Image (cartoon, rainbow, N blue to C red; front, top):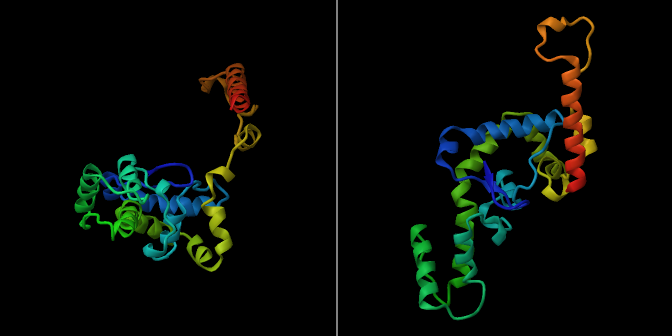
Length: 213
C-alpha cells in the first residue's frame, strides 16, 4: 500500500486500492494498533505525515527521495543544477509537465517548476489516499490525541531506522504452544512432539536470521 524508500514512503497511487477504500481501512488499523500497543507504521515520508495531520501541501518539506517513481525523479533532477538544459532534457521535462497541466521549463521558471513537479508527484497524486487515511484515523480515539499532543506523532509514525526489531523482541511477542492436560490428543492433528520440533525450528530460524543480518 506504500511505496518508496524507508523514511520516504508515500501511499500507492493504485486506483484499485483507492476504490476499495483500503487506505480508509489502513487508517483505522494504524489508530487501533497504536491504542493497543501494537506495531506502528514506520518509514512514512515526513511530508505525507505533515499533510495527513492537516498541514498545507505548500509548506510540506519535500525531498527528491520522497518520489518513488525513478523516471520522474530523474526528470526533476535535470533541473537541480544551473547547467544549460539540452534540447533532449527540455523535451523530457516538457512531456512530464504537460501531463500534469504545468508549463514547459525555461531558465526563469526551472526551480519553480522543479518544486511543482515534486509537489505533484508526492502530494497531489496521493491527496485522496491521504484523505482516506485521515478519515480512518478520525474514526479511532487517537485522532484528538494526535492533534493535541505533537509528541505522540513520532511514536505513531516512527522513522524506519528507529524501529529495528531484534530476535529477542520478536521471540517475546510470540505466543508459543503449551501443553494442556485437559485437551484430547485424539482431536489434535499435530502431536506434542511435532509441535515441539516445529517450535524449535522456528525459534532457531529467528535467532539465526538475526545473527546473519
